[in-house]
Length: 244
Image (cartoon, rainbow, N blue to C red; front, side):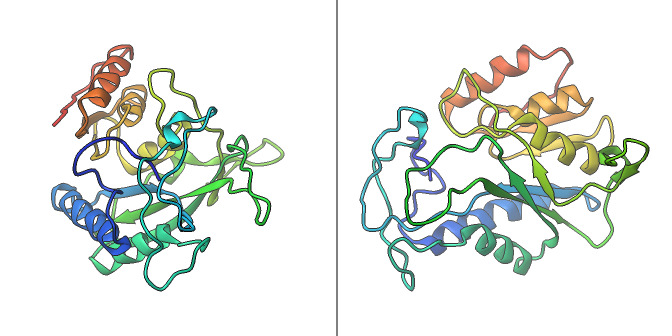
């Protein structure tokens, strides 16, 4: 759904199954280095087939949406079909050995408007929680929600209403810190190490600082490495950062 202008980028595959396989292969390496009691949180959206369009024009409200290429309609699907790629990836990861523990809906109250007239506007993405083993670290207390009467706490639900968050340094998709924070709080202890293999603008690193964790970030594009470093340097706690 984005053209990051980097050779070999994941997401530019001509075949949908190659995209799924690329992510499965990448996250297989994540599982290899993850602690046995670790968790893996994946934010991924669904998308539609291109309807035969070979490119996507720039958008004044979101310049990062412009694309110089659009893959053909995948075999077995029709123009304008909802692909369901988020669930395709989730199920492929499950078959590859991950424990699929939760599907969370990230509801975006301030979602970007769409000009479509023959379907409803998309205002959500998925956040899948996986584990490496049957027993794993999960701090439910750290992310409990306040009840409606404000008198007690309840387990966090699977629909999270979180506004998108602008990043003045970047024009591409940036997920908000409020989406990352519960994942880090529940999935790691203070002083633990968080790995982000698609570091981008460094949001995970910033939240790691704010929650007293350390972070290893992997990012292929030099421009984004610089943005991430600048954001991390503006944070107020020390961070272990690896940019590979």
